[in-house]
Amino acid sequence: MTFDIIIIGSGLAGYTLVKDFRRLNKTASILMLSTDDASYYSKPMLSTGFAKHKSAADLAMQPATQMAETLDITIYASTQVVSIDKAAKTIMIEGSQQSIGYNQSLVFATGAEPARIPLPDALSGRCFTINDLADYGQFREHLGEHKNVTIIGSGLVGTEYANDMCESGLNINVISLEDAPLQLLLPKPLSVNVQEQLANKGINFHFNTSIKDAALAEDGQLQLELTNGTSINCDLVLSATGLRPRIKLAQESGITVERGIVVNETLKSSDDNIYSLGDCAQINGLILMYVAPLAACSKALAKTLNGELTAVAIPASPVIVKTPACPVVSNPPPANAVGQWQFEGEAPDLKACFVAQDGSLLGFGLTGKKVMERMKLAKRLPAIL
Ligand SMILES: Cc1cc2nc3c(=O)[nH]c(=O)nc-3n(C[C@H](O)[C@H](O)[C@H](O)COP(=O)(O)OP(=O)(O)OC[C@H]3O[C@@H](n4cnc5c(N)ncnc54)[C@H](O)[C@@H]3O)c2cc1C
Image (spheres, rainbow, N blue to C red):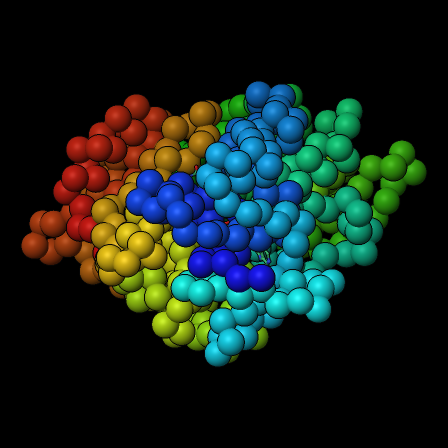
């Protein structure tokens, strides 16, 4: 069996690419494979689903069968690709001896997976991650009528879930190694402001600490002992300690990987017939785990797969953090940027601009009412690529 194009992954990267490609080309045969059920859904909606009391089924926008029909593609759901033979241009899937070929191109859209930290045995079966629809459904199932959730991690994902779950009526504790939330996204005064607004809503933050030990109490609750001496009782733990590009399959197939699957500005990997986009890709050294960059990559790659070699252009893409208790927009400066932060406004409405010596804007953070300046500031930022 052979297809013109094979896409591994049915997340936003995989489906956006197929949609963009089909606008240009109606005839090429396409196979999409996914370890999950390949429902079409928007991952950012996972961290707004609790307050809206949505089930996993509510968040699934279309099942795989309907997507396959609409887009005129073949979808193998619940199917893991286990190896790739680059020279023969074939893939192997779990549980089958038959290889599947690609005439033209193979695309990695394998996303990112949650980073795992070592945790005490007592948390086994009570600690979850929520990185896809199935995770979301599983967490809700275990939550049932329980009310007390402890979240490990205060980055974007941990902070959004904290706000959303608190809004839904749950009691939330957040444990963090850092000393304020959203540290990679905001300068200190703004992240402290976010913490204060979320604390006003009832979220309890425990900073500069981690879980030292855990035990099961007689009433069935978990008792978490923190390294700072605090103890917390809760029903479930949500681990949100970061995401790592899913690169194992590419690596084992002899494709160059670093932190992500290494691709150039045309999204081509170290193999001429293999491309990558989305959370798993490292584009000209950059890992951009957001929807806007993924959409720009999809448009360029669709053209390339249709025979028009196209380099991706990614404009500055500020991130809207979904914390209604304290609206946040962030566009951090590049890691090696030279300049300084300039602050304006009064809490909760703060604006921080990272300005280079020549006066050019390299990044910004906004909270509260200042988020309204997002578009105006984004226009002044240099493009990402
Ligand atoms: C809670 C949360 C909130 C977010 N909010 C925002 C937001 O507000 N704004 C924003 O811009 N971004 C947000 N993001 C990030 C954004 O959702 C991601 O950048 C985007 O969804 C990534 O899509 P993807 O297709 O690359 O990966 P994924 O959606 O992870 O898809 C990966 C796919 O690959 C498949 N796969 C992997 N390995 C194999 C294999 N070996 N064989 C077969 N299939 C395989 C998986 O089954 C899956 O279908 C958020 C992320 C999270 C977790």
